[in-house]
Image 1 (cartoon, rainbow, N blue to C red):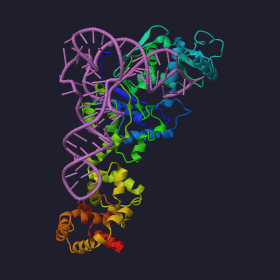
Image 2 (image 1 turned 90 degrees about the vertical axis):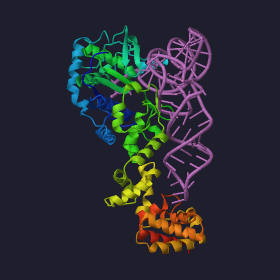
Image 3 (image 1 turned 135 degrees about the vertical axis):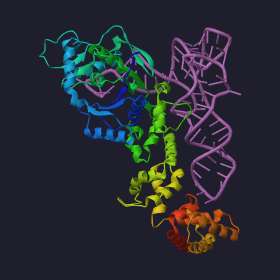
Length: 474
RNA sequence: GUCCCCAUCGUCUAGCCCGGCCUAGGACAUCGCCCUUUCAAGGCGGUAACGCGGGUUCGAAUCCCACUGGGGACGCCA
């Protein structure tokens, strides 16, 4: 395959029978990257020829997922159900040329024969009983249409990832290209569309590798040039089985809801089956620049949620707080920390987020940890209260409260001076004072540096919370 | 059953194409230490892999062949 490709054209062709899942997203991503890396076009095509299982809701869901992942397409979305006339003309042509034929076996008969064959250890492939006869016997225009597959010789699939793969033609089935209801089937329309849309590289999951020889014969029968192929290894669940609903979150939007950043998911996905030396974290532009199938792996990968979580935490750390402000808002609403439409000072929220960025692995965690900054009142964790809000700390808190009350500048540096004066006077470690204050301020024992917390919560609320803590001790 | 693909730490992977630089590197997770006002983050270190067997070769993780294991396909699904 050494012909010159002027313009790379690739497509992502999901069927709208479910949400955009992790595997599909990875396929879409690799297509997108290949297009962008080569300055080509990325086309979105909806494969909805199975009208009984496809829904408009899923089309919307897939588009929503693509948008969230920032995988923008240049053409489409095209729907195959809009193109039935085109397929019909190609099918008629193949039948007229004797390259396809009518089959009058019923679905039930076929199912039964397949079953028997499998039980007797024979190949379940179609026995070809309508291949040479019976066509004239029935009224024209009925039955399904089968493609006449060559039965001798072999086909070579030249794959950018798997290399050269040979298939014996006698293994290939005379597949149905049009159902008896007149609708065309996948293996046929995929070829017609890829030809029609001038697709130069077919990049898809390797569960399609076995379909490729059949499709190549259809290209040949139609007299078209065969594109390049790249079959991506599958992504498996932790039980090494193909990813399915059983494995929990498989829809990419579920990851959004769990507080993942789409850039982090993309970064995680690209490293499944692709590597660039030892590099783990890639900016989007960097990815586009480095991407190539030369560094693509051949073996299937198992989803590792811990690593995705780590990547997400890395992305949260390096994302500017001003951006995080927007990302985190919906989660603040969900957590009941703010009400829908409630406005917070963006600068202030940004500062608060800055103190929490390196502690949150997800946006959900980030939102939750923002609670004690935003809420009027805090609740004490019982253990923390018992350990730090007691007789021992009472006087210290009183003293601190009095000193802080005199402060006009409630900055990090000023409050730190106050703490220092008290700890030196009593000859105690900072922790002896900081921990009780932390419980008073946040309700718990974990938080950013105590002076940062004070500064963000502000003088008024700080004094109130110290008062409340002192009262709680009694 | 038949066909196809795949095979390096628990997981993602580098190395493999063009054998020697590999006493196999990185990352996640895990364990320990350091830093420290808590929690993180960060730093340092540890545990941990070439599936098995044959070849080829002076020499194999790297090339070849079997085997085993895993995955996929065999639909009037895509």
